[in-house]
Each structure stands twice: as C-alpha cells, then as structure tokens.
Image (tube, rainbow, N blue to C red):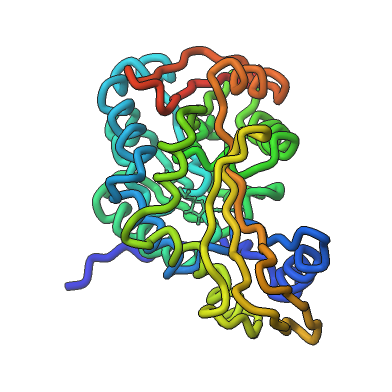
Length: 320
Ligand SMILES: C[S@@+](CC[C@H](N)C(=O)[O-])C[C@H]1O[C@@H](n2cnc3c(N)ncnc32)[C@H](O)[C@@H]1O
C-alpha cells in the first residue's frame, strides 16, 4: 500500500510574464544582472546540494556543527512553538534537527524551486508523521501570504544557509522587517549568516576545483532558456567569482566569451566579448554588522553563536 502523504502545495510562484519582465529589466541595465533566485529550478537545487558537500564550501558543515553544538540551548531559548516557517528550505536538511528539538505542530517550507520543494517536503512529512507540513512555493523577496491552516499558531522563523547575504543590505532590512511582522512581537527568528574572513577562503568556496559552482551559475541561463524560451548559448559564458572588499561580498558573474546577441520574449540583448552578467552578491557580515542590521529591521539579538574559526554565525533574533 502506498502510504505517501499527499501534501497540499500553496503555489504562489511568480507568473512567467512577470519573470520575463524582471529578467529583461535586469538585462537592460548598464551592468547587466539577474536575480540569484534564477539559479533555482530542480537542477539548480540539486547543484546547490552538491555544492554543500564540497570540501571548499565550508558554510554548510560549519553551520551544521553550530547546530549540533548548541541545539539544546537554542531549543530552550526558543521554548515551545507551534509552527516553524523556513525561508528557502531547499533540501530541508537543517530543519530536521530543529524539528527534533522543538516538536512543533506544523512546518511551512517556503521555496521558489517548486518541484524540489514538493519532493523534499513529501519525504520530510513521511519522516515526521505527527507534523503538519504545509509547503509554500513563493518568492520570499515579496510579501508571502501564509497558509490559512496556520490559524492562530505562533510562528518561529528559520533562515539558514546565509541566504540573507544574497539581498542588498537595504533589501535585507526590508526582508527582515517583513519577517518580524509575520512573527509578531516576541517571535523568534533563527538565522545563519556567513562572516567576513580571509578573501582566499571565500574565493575558494565559490570557485571549486570540480566546477560545480560554475555549473550552478550557468544553470541560471539553462533555467531561463527552458522556462522563458530565452536563447542563451551556455558555451559562450564563463563562471567568475571574486571577493569585493569594498562592498564586503562575493560577486558572481557570467562572462561572455564572444560578442553575441541573446533574445528573450521578443527583446534582443547584445553582449560584448568579455562583458559580465552579474548573477549574485553574497554579503558577509561581522557579528556587529549583522546585529546592527537586525536591530534596524525590528529585531533584538537574544543570542549568537560562532565556532572557534569565526567562519559562520548563528543568531537567535526576537521581534520587538
Ligand atoms: C543558498 S540555498 C540554501 C538552502 C538551505 N536553506 C540551506 O541552508 O542549505 C537558497 C535556497 O533558497 C531558495 N531561494 C532562493 N531565492 C529565493 C526566493 N527569492 N524566494 C524563495 N526561495 C528562494 C532556493 O531555491 C534555495 O533552496
């Protein structure tokens, strides 16, 4: 007998027309750019998972080690909560530890990568039969209407993986402000944030020897070819990732290796040879910088944890 639980997906994925408009806006700019959310279709999510297992990519294992070391204390500080909302849930790996420690009634994984979200939410629901799992496919850079089933449950926010670093600082503030509103006064947000460190360590993490990050970066173009009917030629773009010391972020680009034109939804965009398409910023925050950002966004910092190498920070924030 098939005992798989059928989950009800709240599907708020952006419409194709809006995606086309947004992508074309970015390509019209002097510095052509794409939002990092376009990395993530099912293939992109799988590539990201492969990145998290690379030797060079320290953030995932460092954050997991922080969970392992401090989870009982974290759970005690959060106390009993009735539901956990995870922003950018991906493979839902890290949440398993938190679910074990908090035993909430409901879990709301929010992600833009619809098929990957549903697959992983279904497996998780199987493994946690007492838990109500309510997946939401949505762009978390916008306001998200939560599933009605949550009713009056008091939510806990979870935002691991330093995805906050993909927002420009001003947008990070707006995002955190929206989360603080959703959680309500006294609500907790547990968030993982990558720290500033030796640029050589950072650049190694985004330029792995096996070329998985390069494939992940290029996947944004395959994704747009498949979903929007764009005509990017993948063999005419090369991965580049550099640390920008002034801005305090890793910047990823796709460098055009030829003079070329790319059409999307009836518009044509010209690329010079050597011209770069900006695909991601990943801001790194010192604890002081991040705690200030959190305060400016409507949160107080109740506690923060770092490993001995000070590579990564885990912050327990409380909405004011
Ligand atoms: C860097 S990965 C982190 C995954 C996982 N939380 C972790 O810590 O390993 C970012 C995740 O957020 C999702 N994501 C990226 N941008 C998003 C957006 N604007 N709205 C919703 N989900 C997004 C991606 O699909 C991916 O699963």
